[in-house]
Image (cartoon, rainbow, N blue to C red; front, side, top):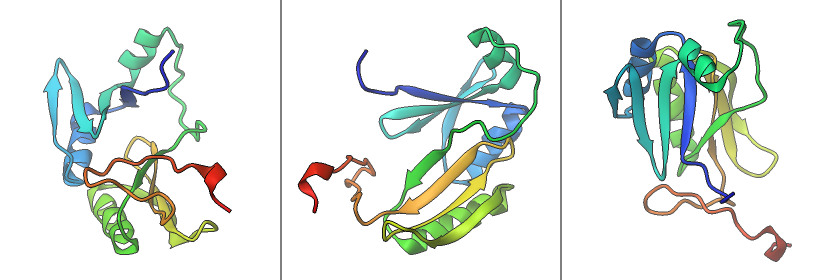
Length: 145
């Protein structure tokens, strides 16, 4: 198996509401057959009805929410951008779970959940510089001392 992710699909309770939330953040997508596809760099973020996703995956979903051990993250170019993104998310209906603050790694980050409870981290990390297109390359940690 190649070491790559092509799509991240979020099971949502209300596709139009989820689409509106991400559009408020400035994301643009295409809706096809009640599914929204948002280009996110070299990966696509997909919004699909939670019950349809569960059925497609062959999972019995009791519909209970809670922390599933997964978070999505977006690294940004500055501390100020962390605050801007989180403020925009709150305007769109997000709930802040951890206000932005200094991190143990010398960066700055905070967390919010979208209207369906998906956890997002917004972070500025000086050790993970971003390319001009926003891409992140994991540094060679063995070369660091």
